[in-house]
Amino acid sequence: MELRQLEYFVAAAELLSFSAAAERCCVVQSTISHQIANLEEELGVRLFERGGRAIGLTPAGELLLEESRALLGRAKEVQKKVRALGNKSERLLRVGYYSACIDPVFGARLHDFARACGAEVRLEYLDFYNGVFLERLHSGGFDCVITLRDVYEMLEQKEGICYEPLCRARVMLVVDPGHPLSRCGPVVSPEQMRRLCGRALIYAPSYSPSVCRRGILWNSGACGIPEERIETARNTVEMQIEIEAGKAVGLMLETELRSLNAGGRLVALNVEGAPCHEIGAAFRRADAKGLVGEFVRSMCSIETPVCKEEKRVV
Image 1: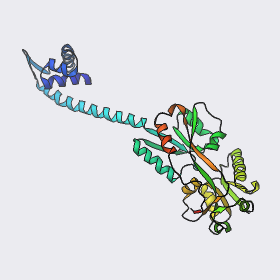
Image 2: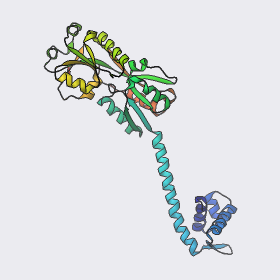
Image 3: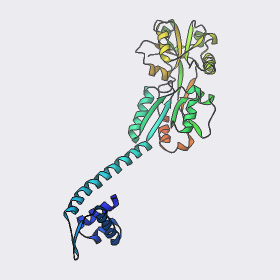
C-alpha cells in the first residue's frame, strides 16, 4: 500500500465516482481504476460494490476509508514538521566569539536580531588566537565569528573569508577603589601612566607566547606603561581578583569591563591618547547575501558606549 494509492481510494470513496476522483487528483480515470484494482488485489478484498454506473463501499471499503483518512492526516503532519525543521535549520546562525568582543549590549542586539528574523542563534566561545576559528569558518563549523581586527589580521588568511568592522572599544585602565589614580579624575594622563608602579595585567592565553608578546608590546606602546611591568593573565576572573586585592592594575577593553560586571568593586579610567580596538565580524564571502549578511548588517548599526572620556565604576 502506498500513500498515493490511498489518496486515490479516499477520493473515489468520498465522491463515489472514479471520474470525479480522477478530476480531483489531476489524473486520468484509468489511473484511478488501475490503482484501486491493485489495492484490492493486494488486500484480497473488494472495496467497492459496482452496480452499473453506480458504486458503493463494501464494509472493508468503509473501514479502509476511515483508516486511510487518519493515515493521510498523519502523513501531512509529518510532512509539515519535517519541512518546519528544514526551514529552522536554514535560519540557524552559529556565531563564534572571543570573550573581549561580546558584552551585554552585543548580546541584547544579537537576540533582538534572532527574534526579529525568526532565526536561532548559537554562541560558542573559542580562543581565537590559535587560528582555529578561521579553519572552522572555512569548513562551515561557524557561520560568523566576532573578533578583534588585530587577531584576524595576525592569523594566516583563508581564501573566501572576509571581515567587516562593527564597532570600536577603547582600552581602559582598571584599578581597585583604593588606588591613588581612582581619585585623580576621569582621564589618566600619559605622564601618570609612565609613573605607574607595580604590575599591569592584560588578558592573553598563556599557551601562546607570540600572542602574549604581541599583547604586551601593543599595550605598552598604546598606554605608555613600560614593557617590563606588563604581565599576562589567563582569564579576566584572574585579573579581577588580582586588581581587587590591590596587587595589580589591569588594561581591559570596555566590552570586557561590561561583561565582567564586577558589582562596583573596580574603577575603570580612560587613558589619554589610548587608541580604540576595532571589533568586527569574519565570515565566508559566499554567505554575505544570506542570513549571515543580515546579521552583520544588523550588528553594524549597533551603538555601543565605547571610547568616551569618563571614569566609570564596574
